[in-house]
Image 1: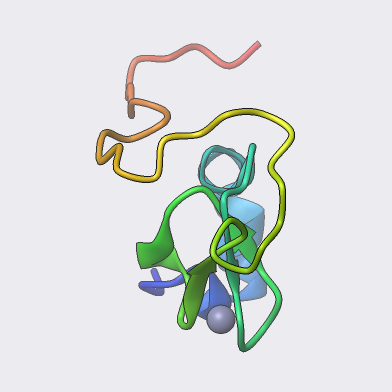
Image 2: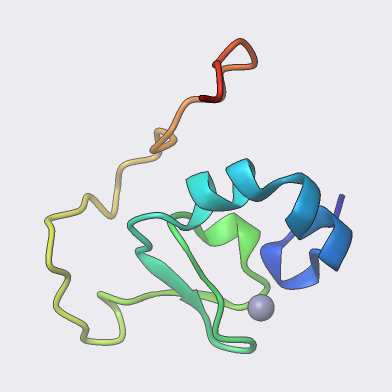
Length: 79
Ligand SMILES: [Zn+2]
């Protein structure tokens, strides 16, 4: 699978919609090249924060927080 969301193929999007949701809910970053959004920089090819661009975020977020917003749980049941 592609390294950044910017490079995900249609098949990636179809197969990994759950992962896409986890990476894009409550987005704090956006891609300056392709306008995609995410809650971490590493999945964007030209990642930048909304805060750095002067956007006032509706919910407080921690720019220095390196812990993943959502834990990957392979045993998670999907309803
Ligand atoms: Zn991009």
